[in-house]
Image (cartoon, rainbow, N blue to C red; front, side):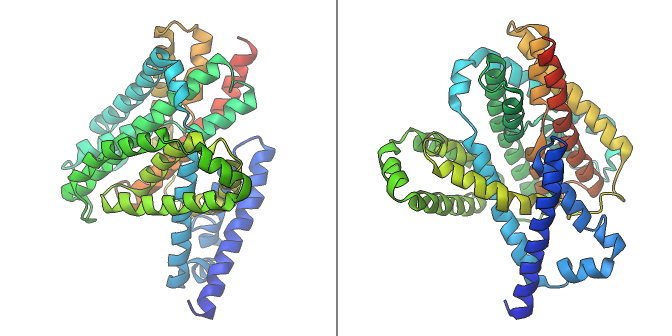
Length: 407
């Protein structure tokens, strides 16, 4: 970059981080996750607000310089990788082993119900989604079903901590189900995305054979998780913690490059790497260093960029948002609660579990942004999915708190 280009790039990063800081703190004042404030900051900086109030300023700062724009998009993609990596670090397979039956029923029903409702919504109400062609309606329906069936493990973890449920039986059941839900959701999304691209619906040139690499990646992640890394990591943690951070960063970037080459989106590789290194990384202080750096630098940049992707006011479809919100909540809360009841859990506790898994948060926002970047969904559906992710996360904590208080 030449001097004017690097200056614009630094200015963009400064503005985005400052906006994330201000609106993130405002979100915390209202007892909401900072990510929602960061996203709001992006809406204000993007075409929705700044682009309308001062289109020349918006164009000059964020669009005019292509080199600075490319550099900004590159660093936000790295931010997405780090966020999914720390999401993978939250996956504790011990939860799954401890609550097998309850987890299978709760998570299984919690995935199946919203997935079926999402698929049926597209098949029977295609006009609501402004779907132009019937040629690829099945894949599109499967994609919407996947969006509605996902849960957000990082947001769920924070809610359980805030409510003091993280170590209780109810909290562990929610965590176990969320872990299973996350893994299944990512597999579904990766397969559908690979099929979408390979079918010619997107000219990226990827192949359907990419989905066969998914079990291989899981096997590799499992083998890494079983490796005895503790002695080496403990020594480095005491003497050279920077070495662990460098190994993790290099591994993350290499994994992203490899899975992209295989035809699988890089975020899936980042998530799996986090799962693979979860137990070892959580045993040392490097976990906290990576977590804090990610949530204070990389993640804010990425979530501000999500709010800048489109005009949220001109593409705000109230009917579509309310419909998807109702389908998503009914499917997830109803399905997960029914699964919990079938495993012998009392009704009120089952509802707590259902609303806990209903929080979609940042994970659905990321999946929606990927689909939007691939032109798999239009702007109205993207906006609707973002609002579903935010609203379901916002209502989970107060409803769960009420149910916990009067159980």
